Length: 542
Image 1 (tube, rainbow, N blue to C red):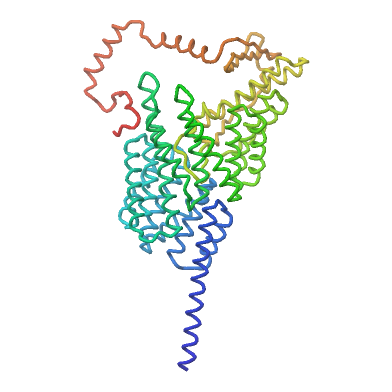
Image 2 (cartoon, one colour):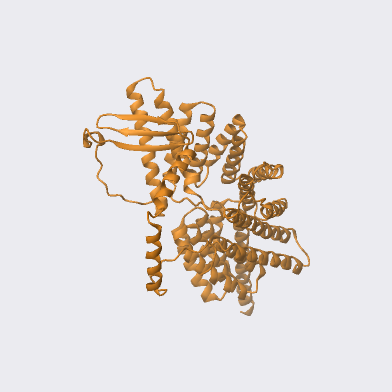
C-alpha cells in the first residue's frame, strides 16, 4: 500500500514538474518572440501560460507581455483591461517587482493615448517609481527610471529628465558590476538597457537645446546634442537582447541626426554618416529578424533619405518595397499613409503627375483610417508630431498638384472637376485640423449638407485661400462657376505681410489710456484668484 502511494506521489510530482517546465519554456519562447517583433507567436505562448497555470508569477509575466503588445498595436482598451486584472493579482500575491512593472506599463499606455491622458500617465508613473525603489530589483528600477525620464521630458522638465537618465545609467553600471559571471544573455541585457536610456537622453538633450535656441540670437552649435547622439549611436553597435527595439532605436537616431542637422548653418559630415549608418543597420536587423513591420519602416525611411538626396530611382525602389512589407503588418493604414505619400512626392519630382495624384489620394484614404497620430511601433519617440509641419503638407501638396493640373486642363469640365477636388482636399484638411486640435478622431458635426451653387445668390461668392510655397491660390465659388486666381507671392512673404498687418492691430491707439486702465486694475485686484497671469516658461514647475 505504501509502495502504491509512493508511486502516485512520484507520478504527481513528475507531472507537476513537467507542467512547470512546459510553462517556463513557453515564457522563454514568448519573450524571445516579443523581442524579435513576432507578436502573434508571443501572444499565443503567453496565452497558453494563462490557460494552464495558477502560478501567480508566471501569470503576471504573461499578462504584462500581452498588454505590451496590445499597446504597441494600439488596442488600448484590451491592454487596460489586462493590466487592471494583473494589478489585482500582483497586489494579492505580493509580487513587488511585477507590481512596479505593471504600473509602469499602465503609465506607458496612458502616454500612448495622447495629451489628454498625460496627467494619468504622470500620476501612475510616480506610483511605479515609488514601488520600483522598494522592490530591491535593479533591472526593474532601471526600466521605471527610463520611463520616468520620458515623462519628465513630456512635461518639459528637461533638467529633471536628464538627471533621471543619469541615475538610470549609474544603476546599469552597478548592475553590471554586481554580476560576476556575465553570460551572453546578461551582457546583451545590459547593452539593451544602456542603449534605450542613451537614445532617450539624446532626444531630451536635443529638445532642451532646441528650446534654448529660440531665446538666443544666432545659431547654437548643438554640441551637447551631437555628443549624446554619438554616445547613443555607439551603444547601438553592440548586440541588444531586444533586437526589434534596437532597430527602431536606430531609426529614432537617424531622425534625430536629421533634426539636429536642420538646426545647423552648415552641413555636418558626422551627422550625415550617422543618418546613413543607422538606417543601413536598421534594415540589416529587420532582414535578419524577417519582421515585416521592421522592414516596412527601415526600407521606407531609407527611401526617404534617398529622396532628400534626389536619388529618385533608388528611393522609388525602396519605397515600393516598404509598401510591400506594410501589407504584411498589423498596422497597414499608418504605414501605407507614410509610404504612399512618399511615393506621391517621388512621382511628382519626376513629373509623373497621374501616378503622383493616385499615390496622394491613396495616402489620404489610408490616413482617414488611422485612429491616432501617435503610433508606438516598439520604440517610444519623445518628439511630438507637429500637425502643421508633419501632417498638413500632404493636403497642400495634393491640392497644389490638382491646381497645377487645372491650369493646363484641356477642357472647362475637366478644369472644373480638378478645382472641385482641390477645394474638397482643403475642406478635409480643415476637418482633420479641428480633430487634431480637439484631440479626437470621432467628431460628429451634425451638419446638413447643401449645394453651394444653388444656395449662393448672384451677389455672393465664397473665397478659399490656399497658401502654397511659391504662390497663393484663390478659389472663388460663384453661383454657377468655380474660378481659380493665382497670386505670385511666396508663402513666407505672404505671412510676413500678414504678421506686419496684425502687429499694428495689436497696438492700442491710446497708450496712455491703456496704461491708466492697467494701473487701476493692479490697484483693485489685490492679487485675487481671478487675476490674469502671463504663462510661465514651459518646464517651470508651479
